[in-house]
Amino acid sequence: MVNRIQSVRGMHDYLPAEALMFNKIEKILVQVLNSYGYREIILPIVERTSLFKRAIGEITDVVEKEMYMFKDRHGESLTLRPEGTACCVRAGIQHGLLSRSEQRWWYSGPMFRYERPQKGRYRQFHQLGIEVFGLPGPNIDAELIILTARWWRQLGVINYLSLEINSLGSMEARLRYRSALFSFFKNRLQFLDEESKKRIYTNPLRILDSKNSTVKMMLNEAPILSDYLDKESQEHFMKLCRLLDINGIQYTINPFLVRGLDYYNRTVFEWVNSSVSSQGTLCAGGRYDHLVSHLGGNFTPAVGLALGLERLVMLVNSINTTFKSFEPIDIYIIASCNSREAEVIVLAEKLRDSFPKIKIMTNYSGGKLKKKFTDANKLGARIVLLLGENENLSNIITIKDLRTGEQNLLESDQLIKLIRDKFY
Ligand code: HAM
Image (cartoon, rainbow, N blue to C red; front, top):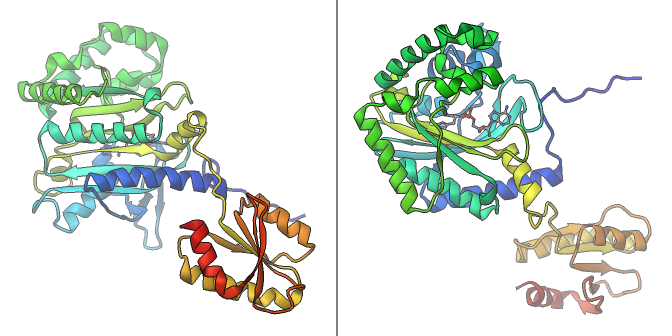
């Protein structure tokens, strides 16, 4: 027996019903993005490894453990993108787009992280992201959050998500906080797990994210970032909170929200759902004012977010039952005898010319007429057009409305008018 080749662990097929659901949701997300005037950017899936190392930070889980890295035939180290922000910044600098004017971009596509797969966590997953360049004020941070809330409302999931926000302050404030945390943890080494002990020296802020219960308890006494914030960042954050308040967005300030990628400063936020899976963060982002200059461009303030499409689809599926993953077709064309089979395609093409928006499918499977009508029902067809052997005149067609059961004989030149009456 020949071994069957399976898909790679953590990488999934999206079968037609799932793909339909995926696309329906994405279409709604994109409609909202268009209504805010954001423009799509399409970027390569493979980038130089150094881009992610420099942008995300060497001492992060993503860079240390999760990147799909490989050497190409010339020995250059390349990586399947684990996220889109670094790619947008690279493209913006490379094409000279960031220093000239502000940019408001969105992108969508697969990302790759070598994580331990579980429900809601995959090795190939899809993100829809937004990146905005050139705007330093909190109004754009607020707009992004308000836009995401509009997404959730349109998808009927707003009541199942909560928003957590925090400010990481300026780079200097973060450094001061980092050294306060270092001293705090250094004096409590006995309460730390092995992972956190390592992080003291490399990235103590990441200990704030720890899932270990002893470490979590200790955090109640840990220094709080907001006590170290610089004045400008405090004001930026207060203005953001005010903008969210006047726009009716509910949020919780989580002083331990630090995010797993190194490039953030000031605003960070996460939309979290705890009921669907343990992988509760659905959408996350924040400000990264220093990343453009860190990657070789001119100083350009920036802010963005990304949502995990699989997690969103899972949430919508579990809550919004009206979101069907089945789209019925409009017209199904059948020939009841071999002599009229060739006409099926001709008729279908003619109808598609006249009605490009109507969904038309043709039967090619042969067999009994009853089976062909069963197929039409399974596809949810509203109308069957039957080219029958009894209609000895070749321009006669039987039209059957499967919803009402009504059936008529028709000359083919009357057909266009009848379809227009039924569908428009
Ligand atoms: P992130 O928090 O690493 O941020 O990922 C954003 C979202 O992608 C997560 O909230 C989650 O929904 C989804 N996600 C991440 N990893 C996985 C996985 N293994 N399986 C399924 N879904 C996953 C970023 O990537 C930043 N680039 C966001 C950003 C944009 N910040 C500023 N601009």
